[in-house]
Image (cartoon, rainbow, N blue to C red; front, side, top):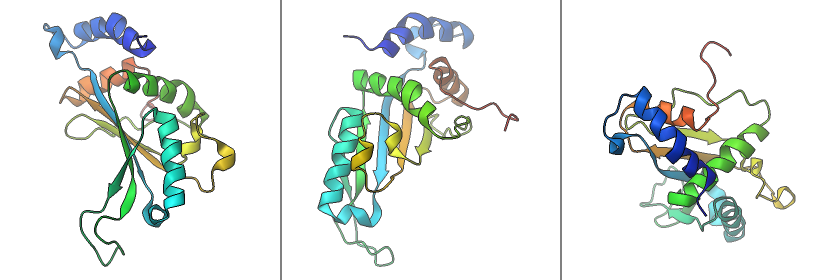
Length: 184
């Protein structure tokens, strides 16, 4: 079954972006390539029980098993050794990406307490949008009763364009909740 946001992108967003960005070739229309979720655990990553519970939580909310990120070299100031776990990451593509984005925009972000919107200036040089969430329990898939500590989550939305304005237009068309400048 085709995801709802993918169908909306193909039927409504692509033609409107072609007109507004004055693009002649439909292959140049900006599109979503992947969504990367990253959760750093710090010293808690050395405890295998905590790592396993966070891994199942992140797996439940993304629909696929996260990869454990490990340190590449030992750094004495950070109390790390080589190949110890530091966090988790998940890369979502194709249909999983659209399903997650739909839940993020319509379910999870409105559940944030005192949410005023996302920063519209968080685009990097490659026109990818990154933002952080302070509590991963905003997703309905995470069981709130089994959480022993609130954890943060970094989300990066990777687009096919290198133009920040085109990337913002794409995310605006997906109804990303950006706040208006001067309204805060």
